[in-house]
Length: 106
Image (cartoon, rainbow, N blue to C red):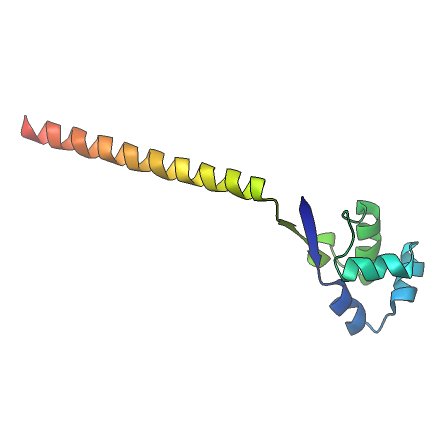
């Protein structure tokens, strides 16, 4: 599951815009804006809505919305890849060291 973190509430307040005004300008409801701000949507908002919100504030989508992966599966996959790469580097280092010591003995 990918969850979006955002700074929408702080941005909206800094521009002195109400949820209702933002919702009307972006073609959605106040409840949807509220749910996005509180990060309570069951799914991510549509890209069109995120783009509409970003355009309203003159920002890039990535400046407002940040993707965070919370799924333990993906975290475990990433960790195992890192561990495998680390182990592979250590093994290569050991091979190089043993080859160098063999060469120096002859």
